[in-house]
Length: 461
Ligand code: GAP
Image (cartoon, rainbow, N blue to C red; front, side):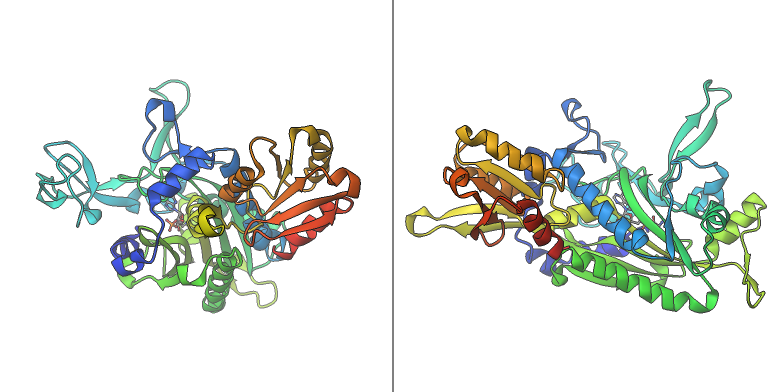
């Protein structure tokens, strides 16, 4: 949770050198093409908050849909919920967040900036980077700083109640455990999943969307008998690792890192991180946690409502153990963008140029097919093709500029297929399909085009 070890691996310079991509290149492409850009940009932005543009929202929605399908829809033993963002304040006392959810922080007495005490090693002073390191600044003693974002409920300040914007999405899963188990008629072992916003008042949001103050989590809490916890931990760790691999991430960019005893979160008995090699080093994108009976026991204690269960056959009474999978949607989106970014030399002789291509897996690519008439005069039949295709998947229509430039624009946003309608198309009833990765072109009949593309897209799902 505190990402302590992940921080130390940020300095893993050898691995970092393997990454040809500079973060600035990606940040700039994301903004210019409408993936992600700073929230409140016209006011100079607001640290730790990001907006997803027309392509970014499609990408993120596709990732969430894929997660939901794999974790919930394709299984009999996991059900989904969508809970309120704000819970009863006692929830966060029970969960341990009021007491434990903090980072050590130091203030600079000169410039008044605040830093995470466990992250200042190797950092330069932002006021005078050439002159001194942060550790040489006039710093206060380290103090614990709670990361939960507070808000007030109620109309008048005097009578208002303090509440928190949830720092993790899973707590309502625990407090709603009995209701969901009974209404969904589930028996242990089974899981409850949800995707939603989480908020943390990070002291130093950084590395683009990697550490934000508002982000999305996709979490699944799997309830099992104490005798089965190791087996389910391994099951879920392997399932989740496979999920990332199936999205086409190069296996050498992913690793599983078990937590050392001293870095475990207050609720965890064991934890493995799934890490991705970002240009700024190996970092956690997902955590698999054995939370034991911490949450259900604590909610029983704080609410006075019994959350233990009785096994119907053995009549044994026990509090289920929880194996959690918790993935950051924004971090995974960022990892997928990093992994997809390629620059390649194309062409021959004196016509060699560099193309930027986002090799996003077709399942998550924001646009599945772009329809490109060779001339604006061919707009009508080309638009009719797009009308047909858009009923099946997200499409884009572009008739501006030369065809080579239009292909490049689609490469840059990761569109797997371009459909070109040319002057022969009306006569022979065929269009040209261009494959993003191989740039191979194939002529196929317009009749059945949607099925053809759908088959090819599904083959890769
Ligand atoms: N319920 C357990 C939990 O929240 P965590 O390791 O603190 O565990 C899980 O968070 C995932 O949420 C992380 O692996 C990461 O992907 C994402 N995450 C956590 N803090 C984040 C932040 N400040 N910005 C973006 N994503 C974050």
